[in-house]
Image: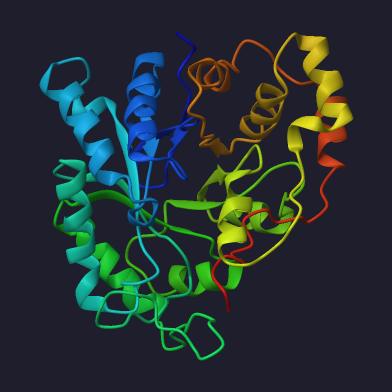
Length: 315
């Protein structure tokens, strides 16, 4: 098994630097994939209610824990407060409790506010939309008030650590200036084409750990975009010449090079794959190290290109 590495969070806990992302997979796929991920040695599993897979993940986790194959204390499970719900303070705890029921857990290791924006729900649970079909966003969302509710989850033992996702520096700073518990983690899109150096530097100075989602790009986003009527060509990060050259030098896959580049920066990664071979490869990135010139070559590819630009959320 590959060496297990951790990021130490500002609340004293630790998070495996390589986790398994579960976005965009069917129930059958995710059941197989999470089983395989645990076999390979992943202990950090990332999910969210909007992924519609918490029940399937919960079934797998329950079997592994009840059989003694893994201890609950060995796992690091992350889930998130979804955009519908963060605008209702009374729903914050209820939403997490629903996730815990689906995951068949007493607590999560990390609970994130999924987005800084919230959307308005109709009585039937569907997103409320304007006449042109765009989704109605709730402009009254108070991040500080929501964060106070998040802190209450820690006090009740429902979440070990709390953090944010897709937030920008000004939004994070407002929380930090008005909180009792500092955000432990920021989860953002991060890869060679979207490096957000100022945000990364800010998090470093604030002692906030960063988790990179879509570290290899995210081909699944194109399907979501098409469903929303958005035609958009997405870059293939695995087909970049310099990435291919470095992979050949180390006899590693292009994905391993991209992930190694990120973890060398002290940033966690949660790549998603339902292919057992690639899942093993994505975790096997601790037996080589990129040199300074190679890191700089990859740094120079930053193009401020966001793959997950939420264009599938019309408006």
